[in-house]
Amino acid sequence: MFGSLALVGSGEFLPIMADFEKSLIDDGVKNGKAPLYVQIPTAAGQESPERLHYWENLGRTQAELMKVEPHFLPIFNRNDAHNPEFVSLINNSALMYMSGGDPHYLAETLIDTPVWKAIENNWRTGASLAGCSAGAMAMSAQIPNFRFTKREPTPGLNLLPTIRVIPHFNKFFRWIPDSAAKVLLHAPENTILIGIDELTALVKRSGEENWLVHGEAKVHILQGLPTQQLLHGETIHISV
Image (cartoon, rainbow, N blue to C red):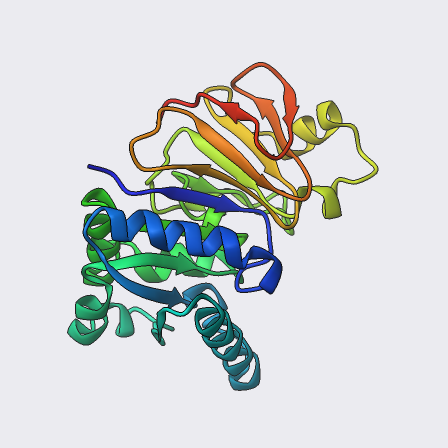
């Protein structure tokens, strides 16, 4: 049994995404997991204490709105990712949410650690796993360097080895045709390249064959499948 898996363009912990996040918790509970909302802010681990408190408070407010128990796990470096207390809190939680920041730092911090093994095992046994922005990008086999395009990609968490996600797609590529954006992003030919707009998610529900679009804007299939744009409620089959 695999849990639900959500790739989110932006908007983690915002009220407009509460119903969607609650549905992911409900999916996990249906699979026997405890109604716990686990925030994994690792991608922001190099940001200021004030910024980290902002993310913690935002997630707590969202959990209160959804009437579930929140756990903000301060996993900011590889030592933290070996903490058995954090592993215990991840185990059997209904939703694990990797939020935004630096995708390269997120993957580098979690790869081959007890925390990542706990996250993956909990998802494979029915919990929901969501990644927003950096969290979505890090699930691939490789993470491109958008800011330094001449640098080689860095290793990702490899949960979705054939998929590469471009979050905030409508923000960064608003004035560029999808065909041109694909060229700029130069993903390997065997990669399924997906642009996800802000406040929009692509989710594969536990037990479902197809991925479903949820949110205000679009999901852009740029490479690896027929080129198309999908709106809220539309589905697509993607083998993973």
